[in-house]
Image (cartoon, rainbow, N blue to C red; front, side, top):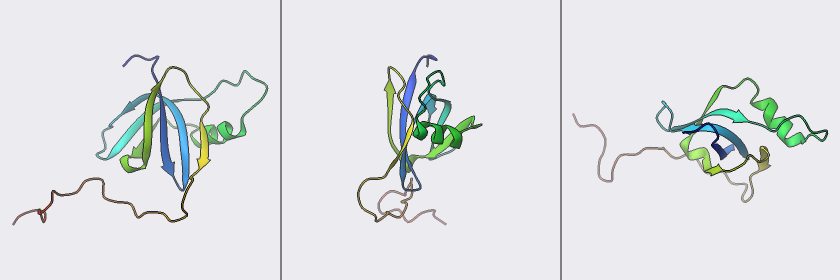
Length: 114
C-alpha cells in the first residue's frame, strides 16, 4: 500500500459516530478487530480551529494504533484527500442493540465434540 493512500473510517463508540482519517487500515493481528494506524488530522496553519476536530485530536493524542471491534465499524472508504475528523451524535432510536457475537458456529453445530 502506498503511503499517499488515505482512508476514512466511520465507527460507533459509546453512542456516537466517529469519523477519522488514517494512512493504514488492516484486519489486524487480533481476531475480530480492524486495526487503524497513522491517524491524520488537519494542519494547525489556519487561524480558525474546528472544536470538533480538536476534541477528537485530543482524544487520540499519543495513540500509535487503534483496534476497533469489527461490529462497531460502519464504513471504510479510500479517499483522494483528507476531510475533517469529527464526532457526531448517533441518529435514530434511543434503543441500543445488545452486541452480537462476531463469529458464531454454523447452523446445527452445537460446539465442540467430546
